[in-house]
Amino acid sequence: MIGYFLKFKHLLHILSVIKIEWRSPRQSDLLIYDPAGSEILIKYLSPWRPKLLYVRREQINIFVLILSFFQRGKLNISYVDVYIKRVNPRLIITFIDNNKNFYKISPCHPEIKTIFVQNGFRGYYLDVFEILDKESFNERDLLHVDYMMTLGSDIGKEYGRHISGCQVPIGSLKSNSLMKKQPMVRGVISYISQWYQGGFYLGGLFYSHEDYSKEVDHLVIKSIAKFARDNKKQFCIIPRYDKSEDLRKKEELYFRDIVGEEVDFLDPKVNLSSYQATDISEVVVTTDSTLGYESLARGNKTAFFSIRGNILNIQGQSFGWPKQFPDDGLFWTNNPNKTSFIQILDYLFTVNDVKWKEDVLESGFSSVMTNDPGNEIFKSIIEKELGSTPMSQ
Image (cartoon, rainbow, N blue to C red; front, side, top):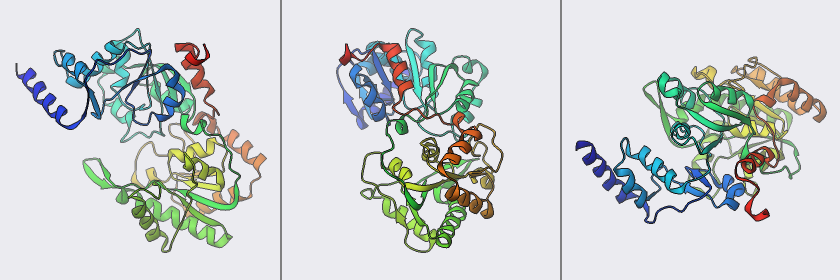
């Protein structure tokens, strides 16, 4: 009785704060679990008229909620289970690859195929692998995803240590969908901003993002700015926020305080503009951003100063993790050493395109992130499971 009372109290709170859908969800062959960031999925999946399952309380279906209220177990788990049964899909897909609840859908619905698409670079601490390592052995046995579509084969193997299923390296779905069109502009060196407002807990202590990143950014950005001045290059920041967003002014102030003067921001005016910004730059510099790995997979000359793990003693922050690269290479370093930074930048600005491609190939980077222009691998698996697109039938 107490359990039902608590569920009812929880229900009243939910209904007071979110958007409501009253009718039973329509059936569909395709269900998108958690629509967050799913715009790129819908670009390829819209012909199948997918149904969206909201799991972050942005929207709730009353019909499903009432049915799930009388199920055993946690209300959020029951809600997902009932929603799936009402939609009756053949395939469930998500762009949120680090939600462990998604891994538990297949064992409960073995007749339905599941897919996750990795949406960003993964480390260890503060990420899904630390969470999975803390799961009990019995719970791990119940984790399964039919297709784990990962950035590369190495991270796929890391997922495979915890989750059963087929590992399919496809690279970045977003980056693969945007072909390179803009010509590179010689002399431009760009740093990828990872600034954001907020923070997180690590080891029981709260860190603001600026506390977490400022030591790294100070060392890296000052080195790049000096290199640019000494070698007559144009130093730019690839911003996280668009000019129209409120946080952009704070982001600009953050970098101006580090450099000590006004900084140029690279703001191409197209969709997915951050990819265009990397394509325009002769050399791109990053610490450990997903965009940096995408830039390298796109063929751009990209430097990785992956020093965050070294400075803050955080596992899984070295270049290319979980692949074991040496601490120093032609275009990367895990050591906070200004001399190494300059050597890498010198190399990138002098190496010709043919030798650059050879060096990247020899480094083994392709197992860190695959490049599949047009997402042909992804499209082939969708058609394998659902048949050819309805419009072409």
